[in-house]
Figure 1 (cartoon, helix red, strand yellow):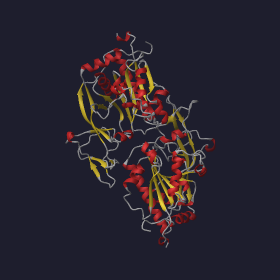
Figure 2 (cartoon, helix red, strand yellow):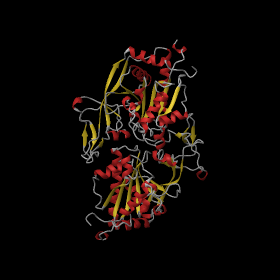
Figure 3 (cartoon, chains in turn yellow, brown):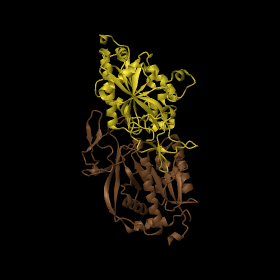
Figure 4 (cartoon, chains in turn green, cyan):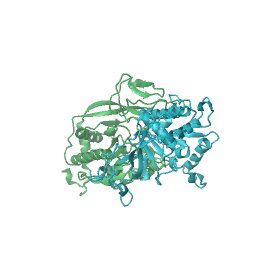
Length: 316
Length: 316
């Protein structure tokens, strides 16, 4: 059995990649009540300096610092670039004591519920997400192919995903958010621990919400917002939106309907990250996805198992 | 009629005293749709630099910078102390173009609804709050006598109060919050415009929630939080709490009941500002109040009228 081998890597669990998301750090620091399936974990606060300052980041969003080119650029010296390199040195897949799977715990002001974000289409990530969706019914946001948004932390490990929970304001500790985060984390560790020993049990299909692009608020010539999100759209993450549905509200009370970009004309979209506080500066009022049902490729489970087999037990 | 006089002062309306409270600045910048009762207004962003940085403040909470002693101390040179002095120079009661009434618009992550905060027991403030409570049913938080919390902006003008709306995360523009803020502001200006001309119509009684003190989260020896607010207490601002009611939740799942300070033993309290994000750093998880019904003193209406009569009309 694979279980007999010592395993060579640990699971990295990161909370507080954004310094003003306080619920995951609380969870990591007060202890996970349930077992981790025996896997060796590294529990890490992603950006302790930003956390101490009560800010998302100091110089640059840490979760946009993991582009290989930028990491390799000695001129990139922002605090968060240094921290990104440090995390890879300590816990990266090439570290002396490597982590081979990463779970990055986030919260959002958007009503995302308990959800997963997967970056790209790596087979092991998709298998892990599918297993979690089967067990907990979580929606999955598949982020890919957006040149405006890249350099995510989990992309630098062989397998990993983001657990995204909301709504909760920045800087607010909320027991419900903590418990939701704990639940997904515990089940993810269970799935990995099981896959380490046996074929992972996976569903036949997977529902993903595939990233299509993002929309900003309407803007005036000077860049100031010319409208707000419409109250009838707030809190409706994951719910379908048709062309013409109320999307923005102008100061004079006029409702502005959703006008799809030409590539998406006539199509239904499923918005996510509606009114996330931190995305205002990125020019994102909401992101658009398409709901798709995918048949699972048997190779995905094998890829997950291959990763999981390399994980080390605490007693190993 | 008093209306015949030119009046000598304006009404100061401040939004964004805290730079990450974005709804009131939006309201002030996109225009108040309804008339202001003809009163001359100064619409001011309280802390534009903190707003540009997306933070509550840069050096010091601007809404704790208005202590007369500190204002007079030339050694107090934090950015917000400079800004406080500047606001008084431009719009203070002794300015060349003075404001005589101030309305300071805030938002909170706590479920305060649409509410008022009054600082101390100045007759004109109480009359204005009573008039707003009569018209809109707003709860009133009477803040007084807390040496840990002082130096509020409105205290430096002869009459003024805070309009506090929530819950909304920091940095999040929300049409409902904007509209709630607009409603209170418009009615407050109507009350002032009316009181400028005739005896203000006031209720016989006023319900206030009088500040008793604040509670922090339980702490470990190193200062880290040892428990969270209990989920059954979240979102229940203004609702009574008895000794023993669930208040905190420890990491092991234990519920910690409300244990009143000795001065409040056996008493019902009404918590406010439950889990306000910005109060964590101040060591405040919630504040405790006592609900009291007060009979209006006829002198209060006269005091409000005396202030209002000095206000200038736009056409004046």
